[in-house]
Length: 285
Length: 219
Image 1 (spheres, helix red, strand yellow):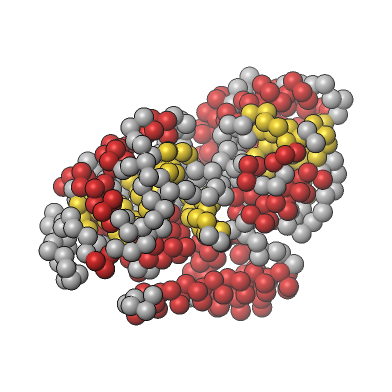
Image 2: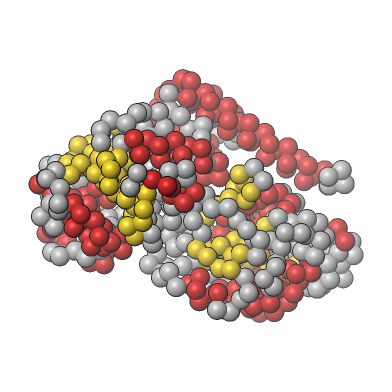
């Protein structure tokens, strides 16, 4: 490596320093605020941190460390950057179709169904599931625990109010997902917003829960955690999968994001495929 | 479109030189390719000539419709000796395999010890694109430094330009499709304008050049 141009060595030194700064930032946040981002996947974390550095008018991650440790409001803003996962109603419609066709028949045999939607973000997919369960006549015996690390997004989720501009895509997803009604029956349009029927959240409990630091809080027949684990590194994915396993009833259903797989985690032997393409699994041991 | 007005590195006759200078022969670790409009055909032209034992993993960000179907990898597999798959989160990359960024996700590259590892994100689209070529290229540059070969192909926007610049900053090698041979020249032109790229080659010559460039790389 001795004959590398000085410029490239400089860039390497900068990159090494950047990694040190990110480690210091996550360590500081953990010690001071208790939020643990230390095992978040580095490439996405790096992008999100830099986005906040620039948004705060700063030029270094070290500058951001100082700011978030002394100014809780800037920590709130960083927390949003680090925890909001963009989603849509019936995101990956074929996942919901598979759930309808392959999981709903199993759930019909249960007197009561407890579901956990872990990392529900702004709630679009919780309302999607509530609509599906209502249409299948199962909603009245279901309870959905919808949790997220971030209190601000939970407030949004609780409101059930989403931008009207997203309804075209949502409607098309709903149809592909096997919706049996008319999507617009589920909301009232007001100005630029769609207000969803309060009956959809009658059996939903929204609560703050941190997958990284909080323990199991119940046993579930269904656990959804979609496009959340992609932000975690391998070690943390394994830990959270253990948490799900502890929280999962025998023969319970695990639903992951379309491009997530339990193949690369240590719990793989506890599950069988329900629909491998849609990442629906069933606990068998 | 003429070649950029930059000083040529020693040993190169022209930016379109198909020979590989000694300084560029090193152990590369990863190829990243970005393309948009017209990308299918362009990718195929490159993949067709690469052998099954091509020593590097190839990671591709192609702008795709959100709902684009799952048949894309199968379609590519029929035309190449390489294995072609849709990327999964936390998957380790293997030589001789092409990993396509799934529709509606960003695809980032990381390291897990010795292994190259893929990581997905559903963060907001960057310049209206998810997958974003810049996001992928920048992550590759950060994780692999001078071990990266970046290739910018046809496309009707400027995605990939920032990423190509980052790859160059970190000492990687960048090849851009000659805009004249591109179905849509904007993306190659933007990359050439943004970064001090190493080669501007007609599409048909990119595959053979890549093989030559990697001849001292063992899988």
